[in-house]
View (cartoon, rainbow, N blue to C red):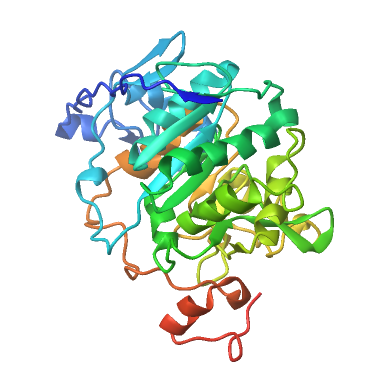
Length: 380
């Protein structure tokens, strides 16, 4: 039996940002005799430098620009209101998305970081855990022992059934993420703009199961999203038929779920952008930039990875395997809080996302709407 603890929503406490006491003198503090130097933050709010810095080395921002309180259950943001959230891009009939996160009691800090950052932009977010938690308003799935990754398939199997039972009619799309994943929800909704939630489709970072190029899966770490129709098929057909999907609890959820969806008539779509650049990432951005995962193609991943900063899509959806929960707050800062002088907007693409290259993974009705077909279009 399943149950849900409907505790009160934990609201973020927002305070204003420290104001820089800028003056002509302070603006010149970083320069002297044509050389640069860094002035301590408490004496000069303007930090100057030319070095390339990774996200992990900039975690100091949590103390310099955020006012955060490290509580027993996790890191609570009490920073300023994001300025860019007040000036959202004009959107067209954007679908509603329910986000659901797999977590455990031991990883509560990660779950709270997800809730306090990207989770606020989902139309609803649900945390599935091994214990009830009022801060997370978590859902506990009975009959599922907590065994980490060993029992992840059982938790995923029952989580999807829970969403089907209670939320099928309320939302258009259902996105799954881990508690060490950062999600740019606006881009997730952008990726979904060409698709009808009444078509059975699932999108994510596609891989190959056990070297069998006929069996595909969607990476659980980078997250995957199911249409309402796909969830309906799962709840009424896939979940009930052991021939379509195993009823046990053991095993890697993504490797099991992918073939289950395919056998149930659910299309695994191409989530890349129109240039063939990946949007869902099962690892941090820097590992793609240095080419760490290029070897996965074509034995593990279906689509090729390129190397370098230009290999990343300009409309990324997710990055996974963030080593500590503070990185979620750092990404929140870099993506939503920084203001760029002289730049009035952050998005100049079309309101409907262009189609990805692999037309075999696009519904026929969508191809027709874009004036394309599988006959005269290539794609891989």
